[in-house]
Image (cartoon, rainbow, N blue to C red; front, side, top):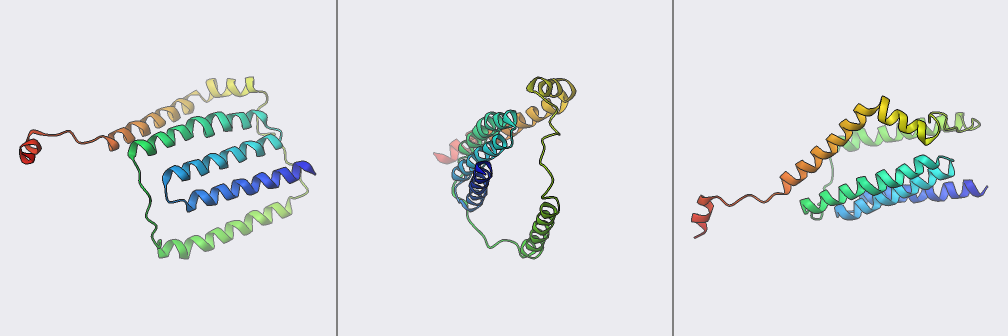
Length: 173
């Protein structure tokens, strides 16, 4: 019973952090809300008995990826975001789609509520996961790291100040 209560509490923290992430106007506050979501997800994984996935969630996502996000936000010197009314198409298509997906998920949960949740998709102990990650899935792992590196380089290029040209110096005088 305690596991269920803790699961629901941290699920509420996760949903609250996600809503706060969307409502924030400053990018740094949104990034910090995302850290709260990832921390709550790590606790959820712990409650489900997936200690390795919880550790990866904290180390990789809440640690490394969020540091990268904050670094890029600070590098771009992103200011406060302006809120608009949004697209009429997004409201007309997005709201019914969201409601339909919610009904489908609730129906699936209610129909299969007596089934046991298992983490059978995980291949086993951390040694086996490392073997898969660094041997069978090495190419996707390296491609992901290159994509992150390209994103950092793009942020640096976008944030770079334009160099002063001789023509600009003459006009300034």
